Image (cartoon, rainbow, N blue to C red):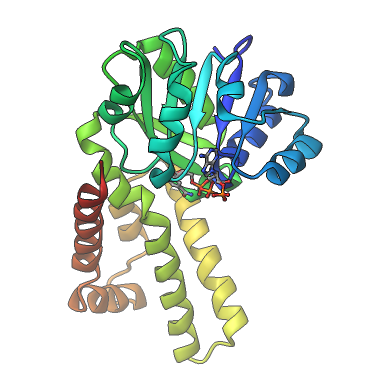
Length: 270
Ligand SMILES: NC(=O)c1ccc[n+]([C@@H]2O[C@H](COP(=O)([O-])OP(=O)(O)OC[C@H]3O[C@@H](n4cnc5c(N)ncnc54)[C@H](OP(=O)(O)O)[C@@H]3O)[C@@H](O)[C@H]2O)c1
């Protein structure tokens, strides 16, 4: 689905360069078929030396020959980039934007009539090939466009398709989610220190517990409640701990966090 296509990546920062590396590593596309553009030319030279991709002096130069244009700049730079590339855009090209909070309608308004747009909300574990991305289609994107866009994000983790009115909720859950998990790991580590563990051992135990629990769940394909019940024996240690988590509002804290982040995403969007 990507084979034979030419991809332009505008913004070779964290996300843009992770996508480039993954697409090449997964053999989704030949390195010669990727052209990257970025505000900083040194960044591009480094990427070219590392991955062998083509680099452009200007955004328009990358977009002109491309079948797929990935917009991976910060949301505040999107207006400028869209204005710059509008001249060389047409409806033969698919635009894939990962800019948080920028709607497909806004992107379509900046570009020629009928342009095909897909908006994506990825998350940082994409940088190590373990991301989850939610994709939604603009008004002209086709099923084939969506399939091509999913291949790009499946190269750095997993993907799902949702309607655009749910993208703020995705931002509040999986977009901000890694930060919630990091805070949980930190808290678990501090708790380990509280009960007498050396800090380095507490951190290792905490990280591996989270990683192992997530793997167990996906590999056994079981609901988390089932797995929790499996490790909670009557009158045992785990139920004593879980009772305190309920008493101190762990579940409510998570619900409030996702709700607040979703609301903030709505406020910031344009
Ligand atoms: N990181 C995440 O977990 C995550 C999650 C969800 C969505 N996103 C979205 O992904 C996008 C990229 O995030 P990121 O973390 O990869 O950002 P980043 O590392 O800052 O990368 C953006 C790159 O675009 C360059 N740039 C700025 N203005 C430009 C222009 N006019 N033309 C071409 N390139 C330009 C920047 O150069 P300078 O450094 O010189 O400005 C930078 O190299 C953002 O819109 C963000 O909302 C990221």
